[in-house]
Amino acid sequence: MSLLFCDSFDHYATADINTKWTGNQVASISASGRNGTSAFYGNYQNCYMYKALPVSSSTLIAGFAHYGSSFTGSNTLVSFYDGTTAHVHLRYTTSGLVLYQGNGTVLGSTAYVVLGASWRYIELKATIADGTGGSAEVRVNGEPVITVTGVDTRNGGNASANTVYLGQLDGVNGMGSFYYDDFYVCNDQGSVNNNFLGDVRVECLRPTDNGASSMWLGSDGNSVNNYALVDEVTPNGDTDYVASANVGDVDSYTMGNLSTPSGTVYGVQQLQYARKDYSGTRGIAPVVRIGGTDYVGTNAPIGDSYLYYGQVRETSPATSTSWSILEINDAEFGVKVTS
Image (cartoon, rainbow, N blue to C red; front, side, top):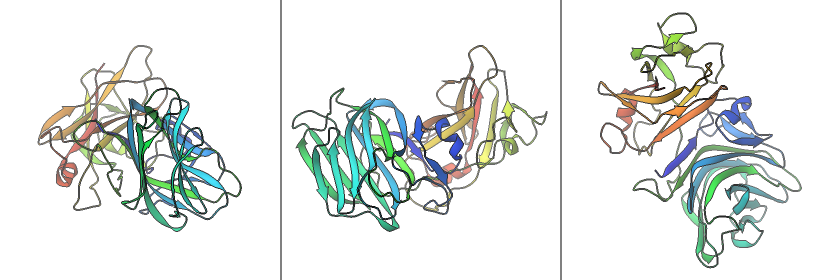
């Protein structure tokens, strides 16, 4: 796997941030996203979100759309950590972008300023290593603006990173508003998505109708039109839902179509917002139905509180090649009880 995580910020509210991200500090979700959708918004010093990734990687690549108003001082855009050890920070100042090692050493800088009334797509790639083994590159709107090689990017701990931070970890002086949208993070492993993806759009699709399987019981007491119980813009917990205690039960749904008619699909991240109400072990897995065949994903043991359980599929399970837009639009997506 190379694509580790992505976010459109379009399917949850501020109160739900920690059901998808590992944690946050005074972060919020705003309706002022890049494409008329939602975004991570902040206007505080020490305002951020962070995600613990499923694997540790010596090289990480992260990209996001960013909109920032004017301010004074120096503030963090994105950071790569090994647990609580900061390896690399990308910061923006009134005079340009600056790349730091976690201990404060400047690794590189550019006079390119990313502030003002415009969205810009920013990407950071960093290889974590001691001495002269490290390297990093920053791109803005697809163009390299900082490139450093033969540098020390390891600030103690392991020569790898497993957590990514977005936002102002240690903002100083005057602070303006900022927004993040269309976020992705990859590593350099695998045969696809192992380098910069460029300016991408992360789209959120929701159920629009019933699929081939409606085995789960709805909170309305039946299994008719189950899609209407799981199609909320933001999750509503136990207000309405579907549930099943039977191993093997599948619920699947048709989804809205992608808004873009052409282009490259780098992956599909399927999310289930779920909890268990049983003292024993319960597990669920995502299901994709393509051409009349169900493709079951990886089992996820679920806990007592609602969380998003996600799986990234970089290629179609039906063809083992890149997804096509038509294939996604025609597919059903759902969930299966696996334990």
